[in-house]
Picture 1 (tube, rainbow, N blue to C red):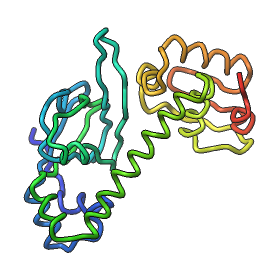
Picture 2 (tube, rainbow, N blue to C red; picture 1 turned 60 degrees about the horizontal axis):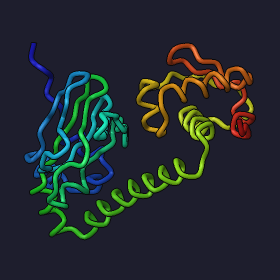
Picture 3 (cartoon, rainbow, N blue to C red; picture 1 turned 90 degrees about the vertical axis):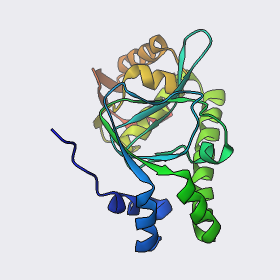
Length: 228
């Protein structure tokens, strides 16, 4: 059965980077844009591959990670729908420092480097948007390093749970984890065993309930104050 074709121009307009481009420019970018469809567990690129553009996630989730010499995997970032990645590497003329793997069935757009370079040459506002987007990602990564360095393991997990629930008031809140606990542990620079222990401790303290991927925060405000 053929895969339905995406409406590439409309999807490009949803990207903040291309939001103010003219219809003519959108059509030009679309000519240098290709669809990618990945199954769960399929690799998009390997560490060391050369970049020839950047990617935009239409649906699904991508994991950016690298493996240590000991074979341990470190998850650097999880990219969800309507997020892009690979912009900085595209201009460095260096290979990817991570690999990219689909965590679920994922649809992507690949925007070619040549058309992005042309837009940078002709439109200063486009250049500012691209720089702003990369600066936001850099700020997020610096914040992650600060979190891993200065916060305890328990504080990292609590921060992640509150971020996922988007609730800090006193009312209970429920949600499903979007990714596996193993990936969450790697993202927070923890072992899976440490994450399980912290979930157990928070449950024993009456702050959360865990049923598989389903999480209940019984009192987000009290959870935010918990020191462990």
